Image (cartoon, rainbow, N blue to C red; front, side, top):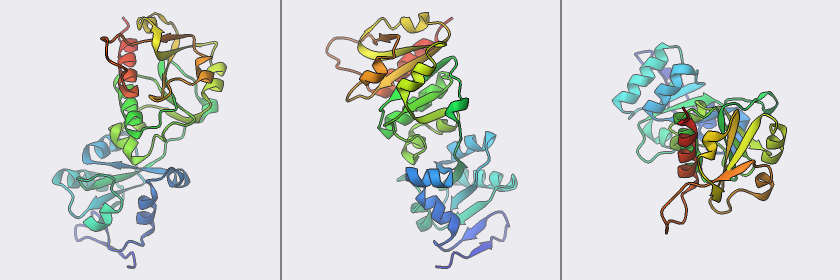
Length: 270
């Protein structure tokens, strides 16, 4: 396979017939954190997610399956007309990049957002995730953060990397809509921002949930792992803990549901 590229008759796409093409090699590698970081790129799959991404962002390139759905092909046409490279490849080559069982046949290779911790200032209501390692929970939390107007999500050490394909899918593409910091030493972050932020943790033995509404200034809501809860070092930096009222006999809610409810309550202040 030579990786030969030639233009379609329509001149809209670059057609790639070989797997050795460098951009395809890079795209195939973007399922691991190390290569996402190395290439400063991640995958956004699906016609709706790619459409949303293109409204405010420029992709590195677009990949289109020869068996793409009409909706995906329409998105690719718009991207090509906007001046972005669209690489059309066979369904077999596309399956080596795709992370979904029933793909719509379009993937955007996106630029990895860069936010420096030294330049970051927490404001409003924001989330801190303490050892949330499940991709589905991580993505759902980020999606809820976008839905409820959360200003940012701070992912502590031990959390799932927020730009893996499974996280991106669970977030419905919201990992580019909410500022994200990751690999953060949460106790140090909380100490550095203790003068202008209130930190409230979700805990089954915590106080009334209304405390979130009562807090003034910037509020960081801390969500711990389902298996171990909030770690002791992070707990030591909390100003308060709150619990979500539930009927007896229900053990707990998962981390994503808890985060969503607390964000809703925090955002319902009048």
